[in-house]
Length: 230
Image 1 (cartoon, rainbow, N blue to C red):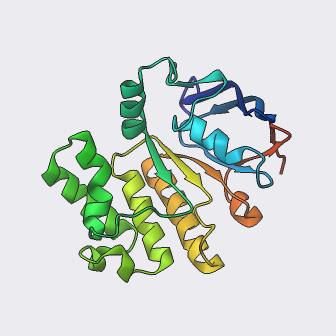
Image 2: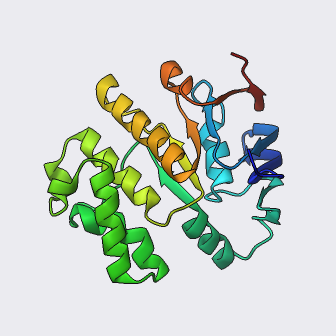
Protein backbone atom coordinates (compact mmCIF):
# COMPACT_ATOMS: atom_id res chain seq x y z
CA UNK A 1 0.00 0.00 0.00
CA UNK A 2 1.21 3.48 -0.84
CA UNK A 3 -0.95 5.17 1.76
CA UNK A 4 1.01 6.39 4.79
CA UNK A 5 -2.05 6.59 7.03
CA UNK A 6 -5.28 4.57 7.02
CA UNK A 7 -8.12 5.84 4.85
CA UNK A 8 -10.51 5.26 7.72
CA UNK A 9 -10.06 4.74 11.43
CA UNK A 10 -12.67 3.29 13.77
CA UNK A 11 -11.84 4.66 17.20
CA UNK A 12 -13.14 3.04 20.39
CA UNK A 13 -16.71 2.66 19.11
CA UNK A 14 -19.31 1.86 21.74
CA UNK A 15 -23.02 1.49 21.04
CA UNK A 16 -25.67 0.96 23.69
CA UNK A 17 -29.44 0.77 23.62
CA UNK A 18 -31.61 1.42 26.66
CA UNK A 19 -35.27 1.49 27.52
CA UNK A 20 -37.23 1.37 30.76
CA UNK A 21 -36.62 -2.37 31.17
CA UNK A 22 -33.08 -3.06 30.03
CA UNK A 23 -29.70 -1.75 28.87
CA UNK A 24 -27.81 -3.48 26.06
CA UNK A 25 -24.18 -2.85 25.17
CA UNK A 26 -23.92 -3.93 21.53
CA UNK A 27 -20.42 -2.65 20.72
CA UNK A 28 -17.81 -2.43 23.47
CA UNK A 29 -14.84 -0.49 22.19
CA UNK A 30 -14.30 -1.46 18.55
CA UNK A 31 -11.10 -0.27 16.88
CA UNK A 32 -10.18 -0.82 13.25
CA UNK A 33 -7.77 0.69 10.73
CA UNK A 34 -8.94 0.48 7.13
CA UNK A 35 -6.42 1.14 4.37
CA UNK A 36 -7.26 2.38 0.90
CA UNK A 37 -8.00 -0.50 -1.48
CA UNK A 38 -8.46 -3.13 1.23
CA UNK A 39 -11.17 -5.78 1.23
CA UNK A 40 -12.54 -6.66 4.67
CA UNK A 41 -15.22 -9.06 5.85
CA UNK A 42 -16.92 -8.97 9.24
CA UNK A 43 -18.75 -12.00 10.56
CA UNK A 44 -20.71 -12.75 13.71
CA UNK A 45 -23.88 -14.39 14.92
CA UNK A 46 -27.21 -12.62 14.47
CA UNK A 47 -27.47 -9.73 16.91
CA UNK A 48 -23.72 -9.52 17.47
CA UNK A 49 -23.58 -5.89 16.28
CA UNK A 50 -21.93 -6.30 12.88
CA UNK A 51 -24.65 -4.41 11.01
CA UNK A 52 -24.69 -1.73 13.72
CA UNK A 53 -20.94 -1.32 13.27
CA UNK A 54 -21.29 -1.05 9.49
CA UNK A 55 -24.00 1.59 9.85
CA UNK A 56 -21.80 3.62 12.19
CA UNK A 57 -18.84 3.37 9.81
CA UNK A 58 -21.15 4.66 7.06
CA UNK A 59 -22.52 7.43 9.33
CA UNK A 60 -26.07 6.08 9.09
CA UNK A 61 -26.04 5.73 12.87
CA UNK A 62 -24.10 7.49 15.63
CA UNK A 63 -22.05 5.73 18.28
CA UNK A 64 -22.73 6.15 21.97
CA UNK A 65 -19.01 6.80 22.35
CA UNK A 66 -16.08 6.96 19.95
CA UNK A 67 -15.55 8.35 16.49
CA UNK A 68 -14.80 7.56 12.87
CA UNK A 69 -11.90 9.37 11.23
CA UNK A 70 -11.98 9.57 7.44
CA UNK A 71 -8.78 10.94 5.91
CA UNK A 72 -7.85 12.35 9.35
CA UNK A 73 -11.17 14.18 9.79
CA UNK A 74 -13.78 13.35 12.41
CA UNK A 75 -17.08 12.26 10.88
CA UNK A 76 -19.31 12.76 13.91
CA UNK A 77 -18.06 16.23 14.78
CA UNK A 78 -19.62 17.46 11.54
CA UNK A 79 -23.10 18.99 11.37
CA UNK A 80 -25.98 16.71 10.28
CA UNK A 81 -25.98 18.28 6.81
CA UNK A 82 -22.22 17.88 6.51
CA UNK A 83 -22.47 14.23 7.59
CA UNK A 84 -25.09 13.61 4.89
CA UNK A 85 -22.88 15.30 2.29
CA UNK A 86 -19.88 13.25 3.44
CA UNK A 87 -21.86 10.03 3.17
CA UNK A 88 -23.19 10.82 -0.31
CA UNK A 89 -19.75 11.66 -1.66
CA UNK A 90 -17.62 9.00 0.02
CA UNK A 91 -19.65 5.89 0.83
CA UNK A 92 -21.57 3.54 -1.43
CA UNK A 93 -24.00 1.09 0.18
CA UNK A 94 -25.11 -2.36 -0.94
CA UNK A 95 -27.73 -3.91 1.32
CA UNK A 96 -29.25 -7.38 1.52
CA UNK A 97 -32.46 -5.93 0.13
CA UNK A 98 -31.68 -4.00 -3.03
CA UNK A 99 -33.98 -1.03 -2.18
CA UNK A 100 -34.50 -0.13 -5.84
CA UNK A 101 -37.19 2.33 -6.87
CA UNK A 102 -39.70 0.15 -8.68
CA UNK A 103 -41.36 2.99 -10.61
CA UNK A 104 -38.05 3.98 -12.28
CA UNK A 105 -36.02 2.16 -14.91
CA UNK A 106 -32.53 0.84 -14.27
CA UNK A 107 -30.58 3.83 -15.47
CA UNK A 108 -32.69 6.17 -13.32
CA UNK A 109 -32.09 3.94 -10.29
CA UNK A 110 -28.34 4.01 -10.81
CA UNK A 111 -28.32 7.78 -11.37
CA UNK A 112 -30.38 8.58 -8.28
CA UNK A 113 -27.59 9.30 -5.71
CA UNK A 114 -25.78 11.58 -8.17
CA UNK A 115 -28.98 13.43 -9.09
CA UNK A 116 -29.61 14.09 -5.39
CA UNK A 117 -26.10 15.51 -5.06
CA UNK A 118 -26.69 17.93 -7.94
CA UNK A 119 -24.18 16.44 -10.35
CA UNK A 120 -24.43 17.16 -14.08
CA UNK A 121 -27.24 14.99 -15.43
CA UNK A 122 -25.66 14.27 -18.81
CA UNK A 123 -22.38 13.09 -17.29
CA UNK A 124 -24.27 11.09 -14.68
CA UNK A 125 -26.28 9.34 -17.39
CA UNK A 126 -23.08 8.42 -19.24
CA UNK A 127 -21.52 7.10 -16.04
CA UNK A 128 -24.66 5.09 -15.22
CA UNK A 129 -24.67 3.50 -18.68
CA UNK A 130 -21.01 2.56 -18.26
CA UNK A 131 -21.67 0.98 -14.87
CA UNK A 132 -24.69 -0.98 -16.13
CA UNK A 133 -22.46 -2.26 -18.93
CA UNK A 134 -19.80 -3.24 -16.38
CA UNK A 135 -22.32 -5.30 -14.38
CA UNK A 136 -23.68 -6.97 -17.52
CA UNK A 137 -27.00 -5.17 -17.85
CA UNK A 138 -26.38 -2.86 -20.80
CA UNK A 139 -29.26 -4.44 -22.75
CA UNK A 140 -31.76 -3.82 -19.95
CA UNK A 141 -31.17 -0.17 -19.05
CA UNK A 142 -34.79 0.74 -19.83
CA UNK A 143 -36.27 -2.15 -17.87
CA UNK A 144 -38.00 -1.74 -14.52
CA UNK A 145 -36.57 -3.62 -11.52
CA UNK A 146 -39.65 -5.88 -11.42
CA UNK A 147 -38.58 -7.29 -14.78
CA UNK A 148 -35.27 -8.55 -13.40
CA UNK A 149 -34.18 -11.54 -11.36
CA UNK A 150 -33.00 -11.08 -7.79
CA UNK A 151 -29.38 -11.36 -8.88
CA UNK A 152 -29.86 -8.77 -11.60
CA UNK A 153 -31.53 -6.39 -9.16
CA UNK A 154 -28.53 -6.67 -6.86
CA UNK A 155 -26.25 -5.89 -9.82
CA UNK A 156 -28.19 -2.64 -10.24
CA UNK A 157 -27.69 -1.94 -6.52
CA UNK A 158 -23.93 -2.43 -6.96
CA UNK A 159 -23.90 -0.04 -9.93
CA UNK A 160 -25.89 2.52 -7.93
CA UNK A 161 -23.40 2.27 -5.06
CA UNK A 162 -20.60 3.15 -7.48
CA UNK A 163 -22.19 6.10 -9.32
CA UNK A 164 -20.47 8.70 -7.12
CA UNK A 165 -17.11 6.90 -7.44
CA UNK A 166 -16.88 6.56 -3.66
CA UNK A 167 -13.62 5.43 -2.06
CA UNK A 168 -15.53 3.02 0.20
CA UNK A 169 -18.26 0.45 -0.42
CA UNK A 170 -20.12 -0.90 2.62
CA UNK A 171 -21.94 -4.15 1.86
CA UNK A 172 -24.41 -5.54 4.40
CA UNK A 173 -25.19 -9.18 3.56
CA UNK A 174 -25.08 -8.36 -0.19
CA UNK A 175 -25.66 -12.02 -1.11
CA UNK A 176 -28.08 -12.88 1.69
CA UNK A 177 -31.18 -13.05 -0.52
CA UNK A 178 -29.46 -14.80 -3.43
CA UNK A 179 -28.67 -18.39 -4.37
CA UNK A 180 -25.01 -19.41 -4.25
CA UNK A 181 -24.46 -18.91 -7.99
CA UNK A 182 -25.96 -15.40 -8.06
CA UNK A 183 -24.18 -14.57 -4.82
CA UNK A 184 -20.88 -15.60 -6.35
CA UNK A 185 -21.51 -13.28 -9.30
CA UNK A 186 -22.09 -10.34 -6.93
CA UNK A 187 -18.93 -11.16 -4.96
CA UNK A 188 -16.86 -11.33 -8.13
CA UNK A 189 -18.26 -7.96 -9.24
CA UNK A 190 -17.33 -6.34 -5.94
CA UNK A 191 -13.81 -7.74 -6.13
CA UNK A 192 -13.54 -6.68 -9.77
CA UNK A 193 -14.36 -3.08 -8.86
CA UNK A 194 -11.92 -3.28 -5.97
CA UNK A 195 -9.15 -4.16 -8.42
CA UNK A 196 -10.07 -1.88 -11.31
CA UNK A 197 -11.16 1.18 -9.31
CA UNK A 198 -9.20 0.72 -6.09
CA UNK A 199 -12.39 0.91 -4.03
CA UNK A 200 -12.17 -0.20 -0.41
CA UNK A 201 -14.79 -2.81 0.50
CA UNK A 202 -16.08 -3.62 3.99
CA UNK A 203 -18.62 -6.42 3.97
CA UNK A 204 -20.79 -7.94 6.67
CA UNK A 205 -21.80 -11.52 5.90
CA UNK A 206 -22.88 -14.85 7.35
CA UNK A 207 -21.35 -16.68 4.39
CA UNK A 208 -17.99 -18.15 5.39
CA UNK A 209 -16.74 -18.92 1.84
CA UNK A 210 -17.59 -15.41 0.68
CA UNK A 211 -15.97 -13.92 3.78
CA UNK A 212 -12.76 -15.77 2.92
CA UNK A 213 -12.68 -14.05 -0.48
CA UNK A 214 -11.74 -10.84 1.33
CA UNK A 215 -8.12 -10.08 2.17
CA UNK A 216 -8.82 -9.45 5.87
CA UNK A 217 -11.43 -11.19 7.98
CA UNK A 218 -12.85 -10.10 11.33
CA UNK A 219 -15.45 -11.49 13.70
CA UNK A 220 -17.55 -9.72 16.32
CA UNK A 221 -18.04 -11.59 19.57
CA UNK A 222 -19.51 -10.11 22.77
CA UNK A 223 -19.29 -6.61 21.32
CA UNK A 224 -15.57 -6.86 20.52
CA UNK A 225 -13.98 -7.09 17.07
CA UNK A 226 -11.31 -9.75 16.51
CA UNK A 227 -9.17 -10.31 13.45
CA UNK A 228 -9.14 -13.90 12.25
CA UNK A 229 -5.95 -15.57 11.11
CA UNK A 230 -5.60 -17.62 7.94
